[in-house]
Length: 272
Image 1 (cartoon, rainbow, N blue to C red):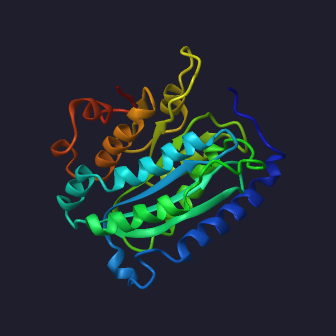
Image 2: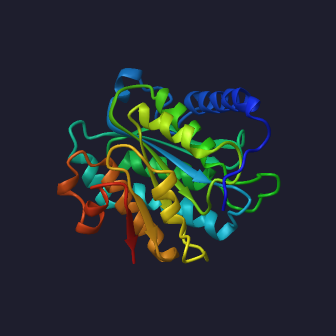
């Protein structure tokens, strides 16, 4: 699928202004666990932005897969153990859904997760407020560039300090709406952010797998990688392994050989 421009290049400023407003809303929206937390208390080892596709191609089955998958991964024993073994023992997470430029919504504002109780509270918000896939009309296409832009703005506005900052994209398609990916991708990488991705299992052309597109055109930054689950049952496993890798400061102690190999360079890790 070829990337396409939606409207004139002169609309770039308008798009960025809309994205800034959306990111500001995500920053200031009431959180389940952080509404009254002092800014200084939001220092974490890793800040992760979950950027989840809710374009018109995301049906209820895929919506459930993403929503429940992220909630389950966040509360898994492997994630809690990885968080606890870091320097500060806390991560920052936010979860937003995206489609076309200007179409995104915050599900979970920035939240500090320092253990199972925090993770369960964040997961509960994701399960309650995440997309169900039943109201897809008018959402438009898949703008990976807009997802990266919003993710970058959220990391710019993270209310504390983080030793590592990650944009974590989940999608079932290539960039087919809005501006090209590369300017957004390079801007995020220049800020020191890492862009990782997970390709949602789908019927696709075996000669042009989505994971290869992500590896070639989307991910970037330090130890960037793509997870490529082979089926719906593998999606949660892939998410869990990906999140363990992302939140672990001492990654060698936490991940298996397959995922570790994926960290050596921008690569695809197959999950079966």
